[in-house]
Image (cartoon, rainbow, N blue to C red; front, side, top):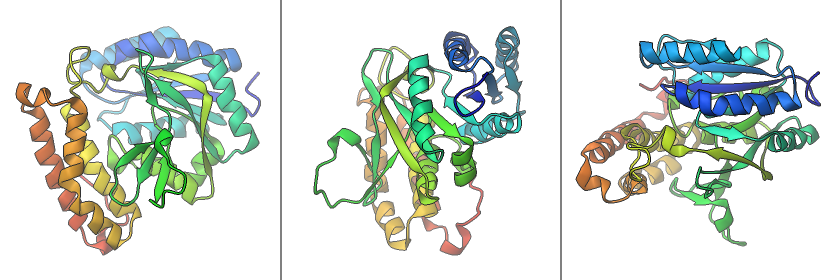
Length: 317
C-alpha cells in the first residue's frame, strides 16, 4: 500500500539531537505510516560527537529507520540533499522533510498530500506553531527592497513594495517532480535561508508554493536554536551568524547589481534586527551575540564585494 501518488518517505537532518528524534520522530513515523504503511524514515546524522552518533544509531536501529552517517557536518541543506536523494533512489515519490524538533499529525499529512495531488509541481507546507501554541510560521514574505521579512498576514492590498513568499524548511512536503524541477537545496548556505532560496528556485522553474492553512505542525524551536533553552529568548551564535551572512548570499545568487548594492547598504541595520530577535538582555549576559554580529557583518560584506563574474557556481566557505 502507499499514498494516493506512490510511496512516502520522511527525511530528518539531525545534529546532536538524538533525544529529539526519540521524542518527535517516533511520533511522525507513526503518523506517516498511518497514511502509508510502507513509509520509510531516513535520518541524516550530521557529525557532532561520537556519543551523539552512537545515540542516533541506537534510536534508528530500535525503530528500523535508515541512518545515513556523514563523517562531517554537511549543514541543513546538504543533509536534506543527501536524505531526499536517497529516498527518491529507494522509490519514494513524496518526501516529508521535517526538523528533529517538530512533529505533525496524520490529518495534516493527508492535507499536504491532497494539496500536491492537484499539482505535482507544488511545494507544500503546514502552518507551524511552537510548543506553547503560538504561531511560529504562517507564511513569510521576503521584501526585495532590502531583504527584510514580513509576516504574510501583514500584506496590505495595493502595497507596491515587491516581495517573494517562501516556505519554512522546518516542515515541507516535497514531490519528486518539485525536487527534479528545482534541483535540490543549495548547500552553500549551510544553515538558514536555504529554504528561502529553495522556494524561489521552485517558483522560478515554474512550480508553485502552497501554505496549507488547515494543516498544522508543532516546532519546539528551543530544542535546536536557543542558546539557553527554556531560560531566555537568546538564540545561538550560529543562528545569528548565518542569518546575517546568508541574507547577502541570497542577494548575490538572485538579485541584479542594483539589488545587491541596496541590500549591502542595509547590512548593519538588518544584522542588528537579527540580533535583537533574542532580546536586549542577552547583550549584557554574553559576548556571543556581538561576536556573531561582527563575524556575520564582515562575511556579508565580503560576499557582497565578490565580483559578479565570480558569483555563479562559487562554493562559499
